[in-house]
Amino acid sequence: MNENRLKSYFAFTKSERIAIITIVSMIVIIVVINYLIITNPPKRDYFKHDLDSIVARREFVMDSIRVADSIERDQKMKKDKACLVPTGDSSKKHRPKQVITRKDNTCVVHHEERAISIVDLNTADTTLLKQLPDIGSAFANRIVDYREKLGGYCETRQLLEIYGMDTARYNGFKDFVKTDSTFVPNKLKINSDAFKILLKHPYLEYDDVKKIVNHREQKGLITSWQQLKNIVGDAINPNLRYYVEYK
Image (tube, rainbow, N blue to C red; front, side, top):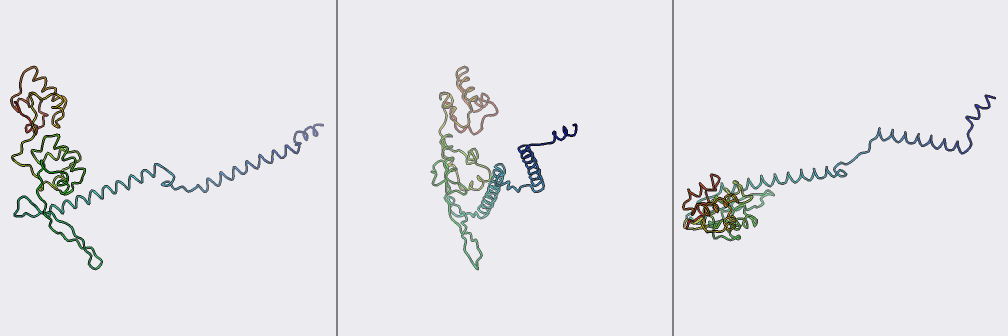
């Protein structure tokens, strides 16, 4: 009796046997697949499939190109400066021009001298300015724009105040530019110009103009550069003295 009852527990219908076989088969397949994945991990091209890696690789390449361009520009500027020669005409200097020829399948570089007129910063247009070494359209336009904001250049070194202008670039062309000693810049009427007019000048900040206007209203006219320095403070740009009149 007990034996028949035990057999009844382990007796399965046809449908149950099919279900058990299916489940066991699925378990075996899953185990086999996991084993294969662990022992043979899929190969992956990270630069192709990983967006971060693609961006990183592109940035690395672009940085390399920028460094190479910077080195090449510095070398060219050094060559140009080394080849400058004085001439009898003080209004012109010579700049080397590279001429590349081929001889026995080898590139040979020759230097030919090309005269460049000395450029007056207060009269030159962008076409003339672009003849300067390492000055393209962007910097030529910036030089003219800054000239208008200042009221004219009183020193060539004021070009270093232009956005993006560094000492290396300036040194490459400084021998080809000048400011006329008789030039008189547009001047600020420090005792009568309105607040917004004073504020437009590159050498005056908001707080500087506020101090100047308050002094005019409360204490009277400003009569000298030293007095203006005392009003604004030690942070005042010394080049501002060229652009101020006290009438």
